[in-house]
Length: 67
Image (tube, rainbow, N blue to C red):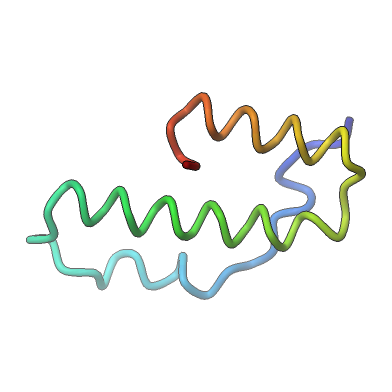
């Protein structure tokens, strides 16, 4: 299986992380992180076969970064 990060696009959202308010609640940061992870996985779906995609989803679910 290729390196997962080979398929991760350069996401402008991630460049703005340092400008997000430091006062966000932990739950809000988790919600933002989960949304970003789901977006990246959706973009990966075009480049991965079903087996690789299900493995990626499983790993992120185990890390509690996907519902």
